[in-house]
Structure formats: C-alpha cells, structure tokens
Image (cartoon, rainbow, N blue to C red):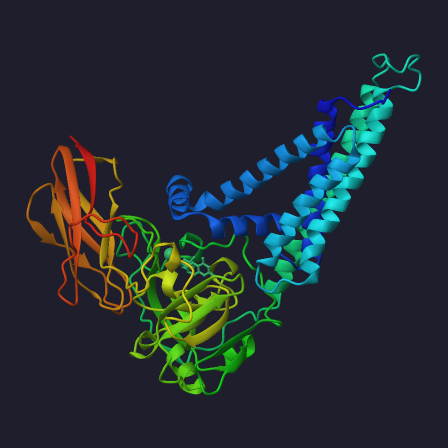
Length: 513
Ligand SMILES: Nc1nc2c(c(=O)[nH]1)N[C@H]1C(S)=C(S)[C@@H](COP(=O)(O)O)O[C@H]1N2
Ligand SMILES: [Mo]
C-alpha cells in the first residue's frame, strides 16, 4: 500500500513550491541583470496579442493593462502549479516534467528578448530546480505527518495529523519564498538606484535654447509645461529596461557612409538644443489625456545625419529600443528643418527611466508610435521595404502626422456649475503646423473665438480660455481648432485606428441657479 498524500495537499504543496520557484527565478534574473522570466513571458504574450484583444485591453484597463497582464500570469501560474502538485502526489516525475515545461516556455520567451544570452536562461531553470526541491521536501514532510509513523495498519486512515508541524513546514517554505522575493526586489531597486546615481547630476549646458518663458497661470487648472509625473506614459514594455549608462551606446548605421557609435558622454558633448515640443499618442481619443508638452534637451538628428552621410537610396529612419521595440519615419522629416532630436533631458532633468532613459527620439509633428522611440539603442537608415515598425503590421498607418486637435479641460464633464461668469479652458495642438485659432460654441450657438496662450512655436500646444456667462440649465460646450495651414478641425468622429482620432470635443454639464 503506498502512502500517498491527499490530492488537496498535493495541490497546496504545488502552490507553495511554485511560489518559491518564481521567487528564486526573479532573484536570479535580478542578480544577472536579466529580464524576469515572468516579464519575458508577458512580453511574448503582448507581441502575439491580436489587435482586437489589444484594443479591448487598452479600452478596458487603460494604462493598467500591464498590471492586469502580470496579475493574469501569476494567476495562471498559481493554478497550474496547484494542478501539477495535485497530479504529482504519486509520482514526483510528473512534477519534474511539468516544471520542465514551464522552464522551457520561460526560456523560449527569454530567447525572444533582445540581447539575451546564457545567463538569461539561468532564472527559469534555477527557479524550477528550486521549485522541485521545495516540492520534494514539502511533500516528504507532509506525507510523514499525514501517515503518522504510529499508524498501526498502513491501509487505514492516518491517526495523528499534527497541524502545528504541518503549518510550520508550510510557513518555512512560504517564508523562504517571501525572503527570496524581497531580496530579488531589493537587488533590482538597488541596481536602479546605482544606475540613476551614475548619471551626472546636471544636464550639459544648452547651446541653443529655443524655449521662451511661458505664463504658467494662463490656464486655470493645467500647467503649460506638463510635469514629468503627469506626463502620459505609453509603451509595450512590461518592465522598464533600466540601463547602465556606462555600458550603453547608440549605433547609427545602415545606408550611411560613416556609421557611428555614440556613448552617453558623446551625446552630452555634442551641441545641445532645448525645445518645447508637444507629443501625442495616436491612441488618444478626442478629449483624451495621451498628449503632453515638455521641454526636451538633446542633439539634433539633422546634424548627426550629416556626420554619418546618408546614402541617397535611404528612405526611412528606423530606430530600435533596448527592449526590441521599433519605429520608422521618412528621413526627410529629420532634415526638413524641424527640431527632430535625440533627447537626453526632459523638463531640465535627465530623461526619467519611464520616458526613455538614457536617450529617446522626439520628432515634432509625428505620433509617438512612428517616431518617439524610448530607451534608444540603434538608428538605421533603411528603405521602406527593409524594415517595418512595431505597430504597422498591427493595423496602424505607416505615415502618421499628428492630427489637429483641441480639448476642453474646464469645467469637467458632469461638473455642477453655478450660474454666472465662468472661465472655460482647454488646450489645442497642431504640432509642426501651429495653432491659428480656437473657437468655442455653447449649445448650438455661434462659434466664439477663445483667447490663446503665448505662441511658443508651431511644435507646441496652445492653451485657450473663454469667459462665459452661464445661464441655468443643461449646457453643452464644444471646441474646435484651426491650424496655420488654414485647416479647420473636422467634426467627423473617427476612432484612433489607423492614424489618429478626429472629431470635436464637447462636454455637457448642468448650470444651477
Ligand atoms: N521603446 C519604446 N518606445 C516607445 C514606445 C514603446 O512602446 N516602446 N511607445 C511609443 C508611443 S506609442 C508613444 S505615444 C510615446 C509615448 O512616450 P511617453 O511614454 O514618454 O509619453 O513613446 C513611444 N516610444
Ligand atoms: Mo502612442
């Protein structure tokens, strides 16, 4: 008669061991400065997600979509290790086989991450070995407890089930997992702090400041220059690729005469420009928040392109990030006089990790997905046929100029306002064309011209305000912008895909007596 553990205890042992395995894997990944296998699996999943599911996830979870994905992976792993444990009460070999399948999946996902190497694969395998060890120890121990040695007849149900000792074993493995997890986290945090500390305190002096002072009190609620903490953040990276600047470099190659590799110091030593540029995400809905205005510091792409000597057959400026994301835009855009740049600074400080440290591209007038590569690792001059950016095969347009848009910020939708004088306010942008006029309409009334904030540059948004004597009742405010090409924002409502949303933004609210 074999003295097996009941299935439910096997399931619990699987869960505890699975948790330990993940904690060990995350720690090993952190020690070797490699992506966590969990995140690698998540990234592989993101890369394979069909467009409809992506859109559904973004619509439903917004910028928390990644937290939801990571949570989902943990839930799947928990269920799987539970099930595997329950199936393995009679044979450890099943647990080993199941665990090996997970390690293979983890390794396969890690192999898809750029720059992977031997040490990338240690995390899943060492983690799995830890998990198998934990499962062996726990099930052995529990079996002893369950089938107490004093059981007179082995075929009978156990006599003594020592709860205290059972909980002690469980707690020991649980604590080992927790400590491993905490140490893993501490290692990553410490490394990130070291990387941040390695960055020179100040940005290099600006040689060409293009950014005049602005009136930060013009708009009643929103700063003209978006603070870093409020700046929208959109990317496919499940975890930010934290980078050691001392090891980082940027290569510029492809169809050029003199390929170039630049270190962070090289970038800092080149002439620095500073520009206030509004960037926007193509996924921004009419009235949405995925648009921001910052002061970017860096080096002009046009100068770099002169240095490398672009060959005439080159058509596209194709860039790649440390985490393998790509984007591409027509080379002319970098050479038509606009301030397309490699930015190393944002609002007077080094680029924050989440906005692309050590360096990113900023291109006035183009949506982020075709141009604004964060965590930049290479720039290649190629043809359209050679390379295609990350989002294009997923149904987004290859050419993507930012559409002229305007938004109402004050009052908020549904806000209760008292009758009397009110200041309506918002923002409008037509990047690289410039905003000419913003008009506001109350209900179905005439369009009234709003007052605009200072004209900083065609690449910068403008805030608008309009005073209004509100009468009691339900009211609807609508805004539209006219850009410097003479184009009046269309009222036709279109969804973001494939090249940016259109339509007028309006808000309804109730004015009280
Ligand atoms: N490496 C990388 N860079 C990226 C992205 C990305 O997913 N990965 N997303 C792009 C998109 S879609 C936009 S809108 C901008 C957003 O920049 P922000 O997060 O600094 O606001 O970054 C661009 N750069
Ligand atoms: Mo975007």
